[in-house]
Length: 204
Length: 221
Image (cartoon, rainbow over all chains, first blue to last red):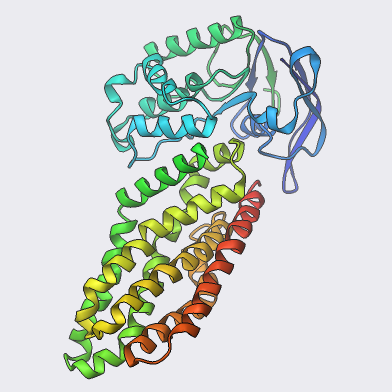
């Protein structure tokens, strides 16, 4: 698949968040969004996900043979993982993943693999309230393993992760790219050996 | 369909397990009923005459309690984003939310009410009608409440706004529900108020999900 953005701009109310953002990503490519807090990294990810409207510019996602994706296939073409997390203190880890498997339309047995991939098996029956910040974030990342999707939109994927989990995420991301996937990530930390990047907000 | 069931189950579990959920609304309902004889005195004739209205007032207030946790947490932690990206239409998301709220408030209250009926000396002949009217009516209360919760989700401290928004719309349920139970107790006809109550509930069940879905889409920014 390919993602092509031409001169994107987004506003929150009257305030301009960013404009003139253009990029093109083909299968196997990754892009990191840089910029200070509040520069619009999350906003850009939400725009790409279709959760926020565009003020101007054009965003296209092309599937097989460069056919543009329909609204329906578009929502099934990407994962959106936010650092805000999806963890409810009353729900157990396994229950949370089962719920999200259903939201994604993934089979139930995908949950076991996701628990395995992110070393969450020992925590499967813990309730969300007992998890540390890093564990909560790992649970959010485990959504990525529930179903194969071409585009990963990651908002601060490295936040609060320990060394082992960072290596796990890096390995998963590299495997995803090798398999022809695309990654767009907002990150303050170096990620994926820093491929191409876009800088949002005022230049330092 | 699988997604709908998963969302319903998820929200029912949340409602049963969270401190402000099913337990609070059931306890609140029971407390109003239990405290009334202590406040009004144990004279059964007086209690009997206020019982139908009092049960319905308690139900109305108890179902209001859980509304803040129906949609607000989803907005805060980003679950709403993921719901919007899921294949489930927003109307069905809203319907699942209504269902989960009803199961964790209205349904429990309806089952609790017959047990509490002797506290207010409600005549036994009116007990089936009490349970039936609550079962039917609370569905509508959940539908209206969920739509209002969706509207209020973007407002900070939306609780009081919610109550003000919802209560006027709930008044028909109170009037028809209480008069159906009073009718059953007096031995007069109950068909008419019960029919109106059912009509109100059905209307709310149709309009509620559509209104809630529209409000959730408005939440985009």
